[in-house]
Length: 99
Image 1 (cartoon, one colour):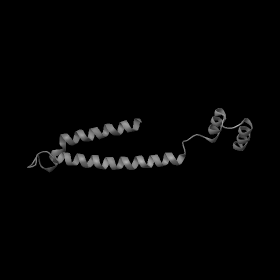
Image 2 (cartoon, one colour):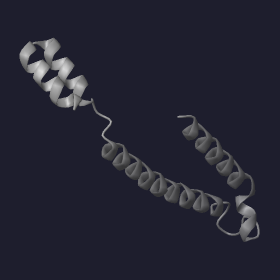
Image 3 (cartoon, helix red, strand yellow):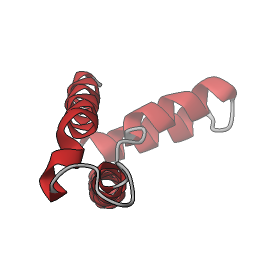
Image 4 (cartoon, helix red, strand yellow):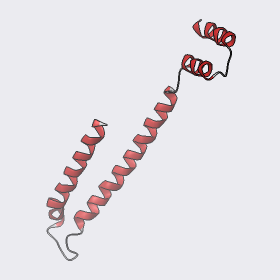
């Protein structure tokens, strides 16, 4: 989570710099006013969103591939505690898992 905070701080710094210095790139405000800085801003926001989306999808795929669900022994204990399986079944399954 700390990593995400750092990213947002740098994004805000970049946006602030664009607002301060964005109009100087094309020789001042020109005929159309100061809109050039906004074009650059929206381009950066667009590509930032695309990069973030790709990063999030890759991270989610890796998380799913690692299988962060319950372990087999935890599921076995939970099922025994709920009464879904008998003590004999629990012991047999526990021996099977302990191999």
